[in-house]
Amino acid sequence: MSQPLHKDYAGAKLGMWLFLFTELILFGGLFLLYAIYLARYPQEFTAGGRELNVLFGTANTVILLTSSLLAAMAVTAIQRDDRRTAQVLLWGTVLCASVFMVNKYLEWTAKIGHGIYPNSPRLAAGPPGESVFFSLYYLTTGLHGLHVLIGATLLTCVAARVKRGSVHAGDYVLLENGALYWHLVDLIWIFIFPLYYLIL
Amino acid sequence: MACAPAAVISDRAITTRADAVRPCEIAGETMTPDRHENTPHILGYGKLTAVWLGLLALTALTVGISRLDLGVNRVWGSLAIASVKGGLVIVFFMHMRYEGRLLRWLLFVALVTLAIFIGLTFFDVLYR
Image (cartoon, rainbow over all chains, first blue to last red; front, top):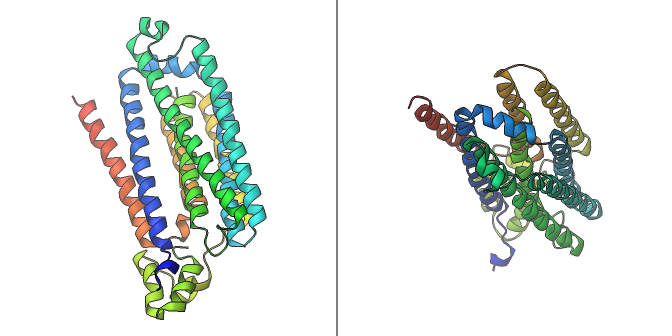
């Protein structure tokens, strides 16, 4: 009789965190590859890093940090039973995600326009370190971009549910877990930004 | 916040009080039952904004440092700043500060695992 009412919040959140840990290990592997190839090809990595646009990187960092703030505020709003504000904040997060992806599109288009893409004639003719750097760049930022798309889709669904009223002050673990996922996307970018755009 | 209030309330409506607090114990909740029954910790907008401003300041700092000629210290400095930023996101935005012992220990184990991966790989690669 008690089954339909039972909701295991602690379990739902624990499950989300366990998933986030696997994500950390996944991106950790990519950072490990980066570190090892940086040690092997320091000159080529420096040359490759100089090709990346710090302005795009910084703008996207600020955008993602802001989107994370909005997602965290949305959790606060729903806890205070302010569904309208929570909705607006979630849409703000999704808007930031869209701007991030537009920037990423412009950035990648410019790179591809310069003949820098995996297996391009320019990279194939250049030193191996250079093509390793750009392969890792496309793989890491591409996988991160995929996470941005998934996170934005997830938060859009959550916003729709907040509007419908199935996510509210008494039952908001979906919003909380969606926000956790979004913060992870932000967290990964916090490390991608200095590694690819700044230190080289 | 390991226990949202509704879970406890709905559990309490149908089971004994002892049952109602069990999910919190599983989550390693350290607060007294009286506190988490009605208060998931709510972070105010002001505090969240302060954390965001801190994150922006650290971003400006890390971009500024990257313009200086610091040699290999630039790498470690950037990583240190990124770790502080990541810490702020986990502790405040992801509410880790208000979670119980279980999640904290799991986070610790995950980070140690990552450190072992990276450390042992370098041990191999650098001395090959």
